[in-house]
Image (cartoon, rainbow, N blue to C red; front, side, top):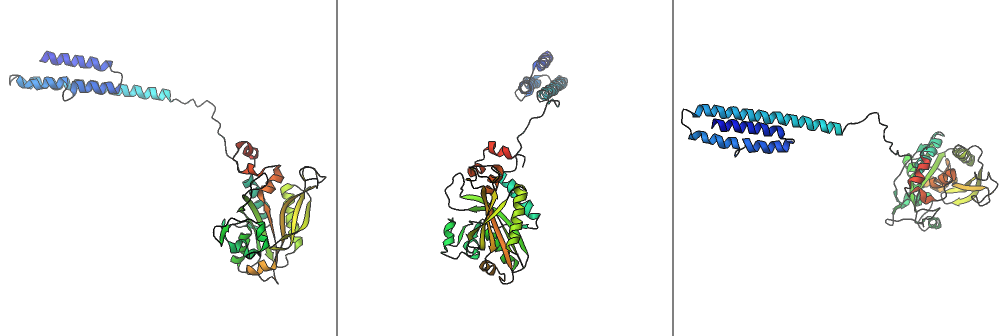
Length: 344
């Protein structure tokens, strides 16, 4: 039996050295040291020996087991070390290689224009105000001097949710909310940027969703000349000092008098071309003196206070500034279009 143990040990130690994976090593360990392994089978035969031979043979079996276990443990450590070295070599990073270039995002042209406009008006002492997109009919229309069935409502084809709740058609609703919250205190000097919604057929110059910025000033002694000065300053800072400004009479229910504001065409310098329809002018915004009825509904004494308001479509402002001819480009997520404004 002693010879069989020695032969089994030599065979096992030789087999261990030929193993190349930890899976094979585990299978070999089960073959020799498992419950039904070769060494276990020999150990069971010790009981057949004479009593005086059993202690020595048991000691010999334990020595063989320890030798085998040591051989298996050593080989396992070697295999793991080799596997780690191979993995490190495979995953080695050459830090001298040039880095990979990643596309960086940029500000959307409409966001860039809004930020430019905000900077201009904040520089003139205005505050930026905000309000809900889903609005009460009262703030959107009635507080703006457009009661139920007023014909001016037909100019703004509205998305109604209920009879009294709608998607706001202009950011004038924010003006009404701000004036109401001020409870007759002056001065009020705000701009209100945000999305607005109207039932319109989408084409190159129209969209059912677009962006507006409206402005409002209320105080004692506010006049049309103040409005003209503020808007001329805005145009010169946005488009350049060489651009001229023209005011034309117009009607808006919440201002009296009302005016349309045009800027001279940058393409032809005011001489007339296809872009300005040979007029030399491009319409940019509407404005006027706040209607006394609007002041009164929002809690202000129209005999004591006056104000002016203006509103512009951001898409229109950007189209004039950058020569964009299709409003749909703003919303198509075309990277070729958006990358043109990566320096904004």
